[in-house]
Image (cartoon, rainbow, N blue to C red; front, side, top):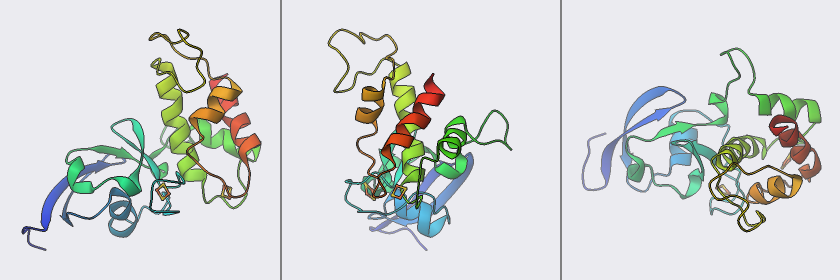
Amino acid sequence: MPTDAFHSEVSLTVNGSPYCLPLNHRTTVLDVLREQLGLIGAKKGCDHGQCGACTVLVDGRRANSCLMLAVAHEGADITTVEGLRGADDDSLHPLQQAFLERDAFQCGYCTPGQLCSAVGAIAEAAAGDASHVTLPGAANGAPVTLTRDEIRERLSGNLCRCGAYPHIVEAVEDVVR
Ligand code: FES
Ligand code: FES
């Protein structure tokens, strides 16, 4: 497809692989992942930034990919649930393992978003980012301890229609402990 006033070549790295795609300017990162790259882990739940099912990591930060226009993220490094790995390429990420052990899902629809969001939340807490429930002065740039309340608050943007929340919190607790 030629580039024109409505299309541009966009370079993205997804799960370590480079892509250069001719994209309509209205194409979201979520649609690139699902429709063009066949990475269907991230889900289109609401397509309005309300459910978190489409959460991926963009340059290490979690983000709702349904709200991101791909053309605005030229050069971004994106990790989807398919790209989460353990210590070696053949093993599960510790959070994936913990979700299995804690039975932290039922239908699994929200799970890719929950996992990517939890990876991002753990990194944010380690970097000292305060949440809504972090006590004033507790962070000040120091790592924030992920208590149950912190985990609940930091994952509150990821809805689970099956109500698997208690086990999701336990799984994240297992990993941060
Ligand atoms: Fe993106 Fe719901 S599909 S937040
Ligand atoms: Fe079904 Fe969360 S496990 S929506």
